[in-house]
Image 1 (cartoon, rainbow, N blue to C red):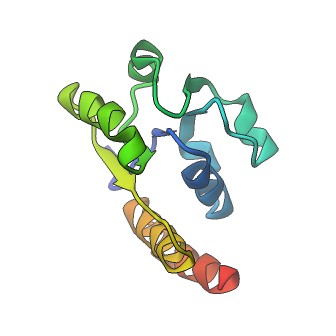
Image 2 (cartoon, helix red, strand yellow):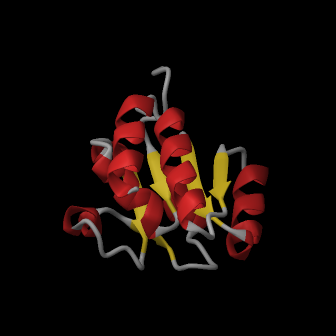
Length: 123
């Protein structure tokens, strides 16, 4: 078992795009149906809309981390947690919070240095 998540399902586009920008796109195994960037991510299995998910598709991907966004996905997150998954839900609503999300996500996947560089670039 790796020290950091290797099979990540992203229920929103922001985390998918951030993981790709950090060089961890290969770890993304499932995405939201609304994902448009990066183009390569659109080839991944689509497991959710914004407020509902295909739990059987998520389970088949055997994720070791699921990333969600805001109170709008609270019910999805709760159901996935009840099913035994690790779920991190971000709630960024400002530029400062977006930069914090980038840094936090980098830490979660073992790429804190790259995340700090990306956050500074975005600033």
